[in-house]
Length: 178
Image (cartoon, rainbow, N blue to C red; front, top):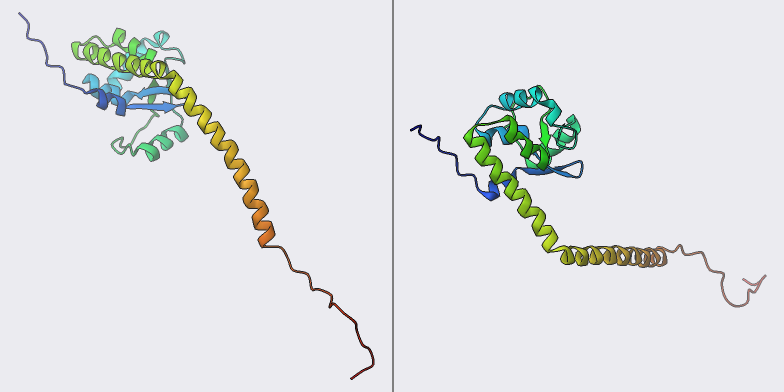
């Protein structure tokens, strides 16, 4: 009987920490996925390139330099070293498709965990839809109130900074008298 390779214990928090929002979509980067799957990034990308028809734009896309720099500055991704190519970002569907091109037991098990995390995240949003709607209403209300408060402050400032014009003296002027 063949001994099975021990799959690393990757926690939900470790997976969630590797999910970023780029172009308004939740994605995972090739380097992070390769690390979890126990393969080199270039091996993962080669498998994807050999099966490119399985990865349309809504499954995977390459980051631009600006997007990559933004991720580095926002999340302090410091272990990227000298990248020659911009990383690939995989959406939930792209991550699921990776299981068809990376067939190691570790890749399959890690993929199952990742897909479950995405499913839980989506369910959490659905379960709390009313809460999200209430939060949005509050945000909109605060934005409107903020505009009103800004208008009040503008009027107050204009009253406080009002230029004083020299006033004409009140009363009679007596001319010719010393």
